[in-house]
Image (cartoon, rainbow, N blue to C red; front, side, top):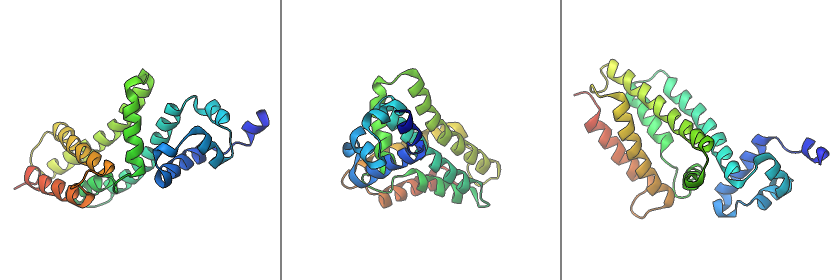
Length: 198
């Protein structure tokens, strides 16, 4: 057993494999046994590291969010008008399409959070908080530079993220009549009327 643990793939490789399986086969095919076969570990060995499938899914989401967070930081810190960076934030937020693996995982983790402990809920709140803080900072910058109307950045961010979440769920589950291009069009129009300085 000690030798097996020593030869186990790095945790990041296991999480990357889990995300790849979700992207290729869907979340329903992601079992501990199937993931174990993918990375050369037994399901028992995986449970030794992750304790439960819920924990594996949450860690995979945190890993995916870490990658998105790095991309978000790159987009939001580049020298560009606030509106251009806000459009990039929205573009990164909205799923690529039906069964987007990150959003599929996000939906599953939140669905399972009904029975999650406080630690798991805190970790999920940290994921949401990072998106919110970045958006608030961008809105505050746009307001201070006169690019945006004098809105309350925190309140506007809360409402905008609720709009994005609702639309994004529609895209991720493949609701008929709601695709990514339509959603981006709706959000672009909303931002133009609600936020841009006149």
